[in-house]
Length: 68
Image 1 (cartoon, rainbow, N blue to C red):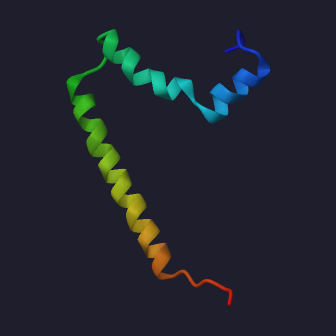
Image 2: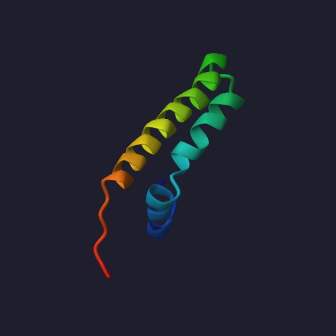
């Protein structure tokens, strides 16, 4: 990423992580990805979504706001 100016390096590194966005499509195009990996990704995403949602709802049950 050193070919980019410092501002672009910051944007691509912290705001828009190109490495994560481009990794899977590039591996698919080059044929370096297994079909099981493609099936496993949505399953893993669903599991992590369910875990996050459960933690969020548990937090909301115990939340007590302050104010008027």
